[in-house]
Length: 367
Image: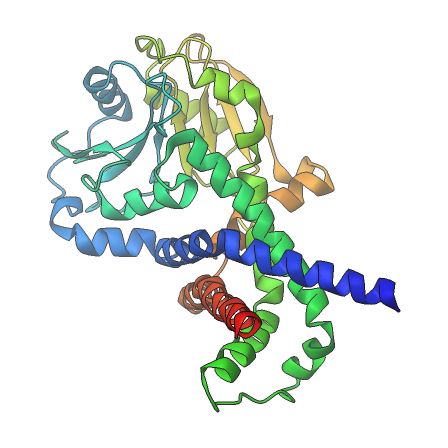
């Protein structure tokens, strides 16, 4: 009996300290994550005047825009075209992968370009509010805007929050079924009963979602534990080496190689060892899967180097392909996104109610 009590005390203490240590970060990650569910919609609304373009004549070739970016930013590790399926009145969006050799910065930039005139509409780093506050939030969600140490911190907190959820499920295991069947009622007597019941009820309802969100977030960022990745970030990006073959020709070759692939992400190489890569879902592929299909081409010879199809991969690869949609709520329409906004706010609520419960316990101990 004493062993059981000791185990329960240990689990309860672990749950409390995990929550206290990660509480403020849990709140920040939850708020930023909820905002990012509608990243594109909010960004386009805030910057409508900038991102809306007038279709005038024929759009410039991808190669022209690619080389324009390469001239504008002479030291890049790569360029990604984020919206190859952009509407005719929509600016092209590019992610710029940079490396200044400092681990204190997370070297991501962005550029928005008018595809008809070639005018640069936005240009800057995600560490700054300008060019885009929403993309600043995106990088904050990844790394708290603290560079690689922040990325590692966010990954570690993914583990602590996962452990907090697991220990919480053990502590409240007797209430799980009762909460799901609405047998547990809220007591509105005072702040103590309110915080206690909210923590229990919200924690149970959010249990399944939190396990998914925290695990997928940790898993997608686990490269933060790779010493080799850190070492690479200490070497500044050399001068660009752009593709010998025109980017448009590389794109045509990739699409011909896999005609059932829907372009979602196009990687444009800026260094000699990098490949041109077209990736995205296949036609009729479930929205629960993110990518997993790609065509890689040598930018020097224009030859196809490799092709990957999710349908030909193993079970674990297919499982991993669901992590981003499950983490970001991209597998459904507006109702699913609204649900994810609410889900994103729940961890913050749990951190607040958990802190109140801890404070109540501390006051009781010293009174």
